[in-house]
Each structure stands twice: as C-alpha cells, then as structure tokens.
Length: 233
Length: 220
Ligand SMILES: [Zn+2]
Image 1 (cartoon, rainbow over the protein chains, first blue to last red):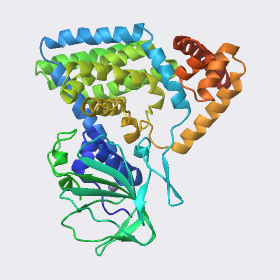
Image 2: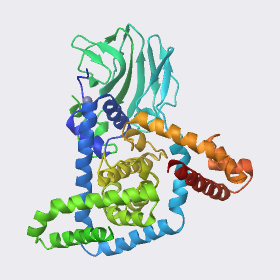
Image 3: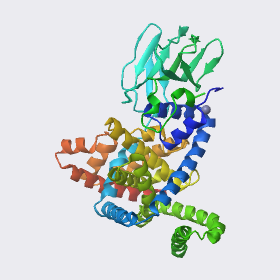
Image 4: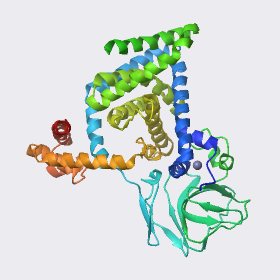
C-alpha cells in the first residue's frame, strides 16, 4: 500500500499546471499509481477551472479595453472559420488519434518496465551505470534540476546524493527499505542530506528521481515560494 | 430547442449586467439554475461539435470561452500576443479533440480548462526554455481511463476503416493508406508522391470524408 503522497500544495499546483516539467511528471506518475491522489487532483482541477474562469470574468468585465479586445477575438474567430484552419487542424491530428498512443517501455538488465503516461516522450537517452546502479537521464530542459530514472538491481543500495539540495524519489516498481520503513511502488518521498540512511533493495527497484539545486523551486516555471521539501511529506 | 438556447444566452448576459450593478438579489436565487442550464447548453454545443462538426456550435463555444482563455493567458503568460495564441491553440484543440470529451466525466468548462492548461504548459516551456515540445497531454491525458474500452473501440474503427479503404478512388486510397497504414507524415507522403503537401491534404480530406460516409452507413 502506498504510504507517502504528494501534499495538498503540490497537488494543487499540479492541477493548475504550475509545476516545472520534472515535478509535473512525478505527480502525474504518482496519480496514475494512486487512485486516492488521482481523485484529489480531479477535484482540484474542477476547483481551479472555476477559479480561473471566474477570475477571467472579472478581468474582462471592466472598461474600454474589453471592446478593443473583443474585436481581436472576433477577428480570430472569423479567421479560424474562414481559411480552413479548423479542417486542416482536424486532418493533421487524425492519423495520430487513430494510432492510439502507448506508454513508454524501457528495458534494463533484461527486464521490461512499462512506464506511466507522463514518461511517454521522455525516454530518449541510454541507460548508464556501474554494478547494480543504473541511471537514465531525462532531458527536461531545466537547468537547475536533474531528473532521471534510477534502477537498482537486487540486493543493491540506493546511492546517497552528495549535495545540499533535496531529492524527490518516486518508486515506480519493486521495493526498498531503510531502518524506518519499507517502500512500495507509488511511494513519493524526499530523501535529503539530513536523513542519514542507506536504503537497500532486496528484489530490485525502479525509481524516478529529481534532484534540485538549492532553492531551484523558488524560481522555475511557477510562483512556487517553497523549497521542494516543504511541498512533500 | 433554439428557444431554449437563446434564452440561456440571454440569461448569461442578464447575469453579468446585474452583477456589475451590484443588484444581485434576484440572480443569487436564480444562479444555481442558470449555472445548470449553462452547463447543459455547453454540453449540447460540445456534442454538436463532436458528432456533427458543427461550426455554428463551435462559434458559440468560442464566444463563451475565448474571453476567459485570453484573461487566463494574460495572467499566466503575461503577454497579450501569447494570450491570443493560447486562445487559438486551445480552441483549435477543442475542435479537433471534441470526440475525447465525455459528458459523464466532466463539465465542458472543466474539460476546456484542461485543454487550455495543457497547452499553456507547453507554451510556457517554449517561452522559458525554448523547447518545442508537447508534453502537456502526456502529463494530464485528455481521455480519462477506460483504456480497454478505448483500445477496443479504436481497433474496431480501424478495422472498419481499413475494410473500406479499397472502395476509395485510387488517388485518395493511396494517401489514406500512406498515412494510416505506413504511418508516413503528410510531408513524407508528399515527397514520395512528388505532389505538393496541399494536394496530400485535400486528397486525405476527401478520402476521410468518404470513409466517414461509409462508416456512418455501417453503423446505422
Ligand atoms: Zn497518493
């Protein structure tokens, strides 16, 4: 059973689309494994759609600017209706719709892992590693966070990171445990430099990890004000 | 039906006028009903877009959502031009992905919000990281679960589609087969056939319209 979940703030920011890619992938993948959080995100999405669209109402209700802009929107609509934009858009998308998209599969040490939807276009690099530890880097385009898949073969140890930031770990398959707990697929947690522990896996495991440079998440894509650790249990 | 629709539009105007004048006593009583009517009205429009490709219904959805999307875009993207791009991209997807909307699972406004949020996510990455990628729909899939059903359905549709491909005129058949069976892009196909991409598009459109006709007969 999943014991560690993203907290409410993180789920809310995810529903609004305000997290950077590396974290959006983590929350999305967790929700695919955790019906409980998936339901919360669905409710938060309704709430934020109401919030966004009613805010919009207020800001378009005032003043002269509105009229000018309405002309813009009218022009855009006329444009879309007249020059076949809609039809050619439909045609461009049709083949892709017909060949239903599938989840990405990655093979490491002779085992195939089917990954959550969020990884569909993210597995473009090769696995690299020494001994029991293998890593596949994702190209998220974020300068200050590194996202990767981490595979530990059976009876291996999770490597400890050696920097001041924090590390988000989402267990995707298998198990690992430390002196406090056993973690199962779907568990979403932070291992930071203060936690002196060395998790081990018996059967082997596949994780998704995001390592942030200190304070990265105070900038980034969103208006996040908290370091990653405060957003996660 | 027409009456009901124009009535409902009228209500919305009334509501916004009243709230501006702060005379909200009456509307407070009515607003639950009005919201429900509005939701039903929007759902009807979506259905007309999905099933009949109704441009009139699309224009009404556009009138309802585009100011909201633009306001969201101004806030999130902080550039007027980008906000208009967001309106265009979002509404184009509402048109092309209308068949993915499921009235049992979400209100139209929630669904349009998700389309917009996903699009905005990709646009922000483009602005901030100069990345031309489209990951939003992977992170928040627009179709919700029921995967087995969906795959089943797709399979049946493709099988039906393929069965009728042979009935198409040769030039249309060539294009439909290239796109669907050999999974070529339109550009690749245009290069291969040595025709302009516009020709590929128009043959494909004609072919698909004809196939759609076959399939409608098939399902009737
Ligand atoms: Zn959860």
